[in-house]
Length: 243
Image (tube, rainbow, N blue to C red; front, side, top):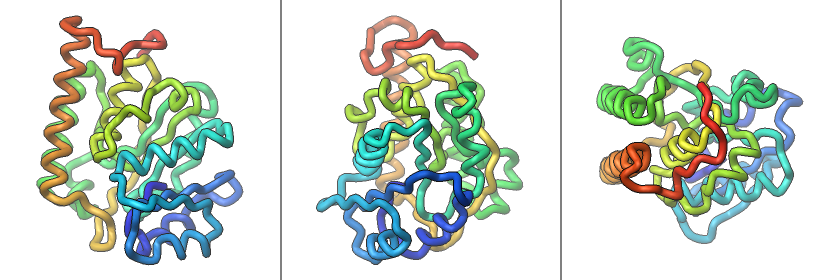
């Protein structure tokens, strides 16, 4: 769990984890100024603390680096802000455990009515749909969203995707997704509820704008690679891609 000022929602997120299924819970605190670390330790989580705020991507780098030391079969990343239904972890990771997929994520976008009634602001819904269409066209995929904060990865994927070279910013998730897809890893999704509320974290306007611009640049970079105008090592395939 990449955490930053999550004291109000952390315990609810952890309590919804399926009992006797999760082997270890790692929380990486990215310089919070609230009681996130104290609550995490009270819940007996394995806690790592950044002395300075590295950013969302930098937080995840520590999460995966520390998780891989335990040689896991699957690593689940979930935001501790209770936006994502952690009770669905079994459903999320089963296709990876059976070897059918290398990455799974929670999809919140089934219908516009469901997304908006779940509290998703219309502007976020609209941008989510717009970028989803664009990314599907560029990748040649058919995913329902790309902005999910609930994801699961096989250890094989994490060992072969160079996530330590990725951005420390919010575009990190997009780099993981596109790089994994370009390298031939199999990706799928499960449907999860939409939960937006006042205590949940939300990307600010300036950072959100930067994230969208970085995503556009990443897609352009991948498109140039895909059309063989350039050979980008970030997207060099390690496995034959299969649908």
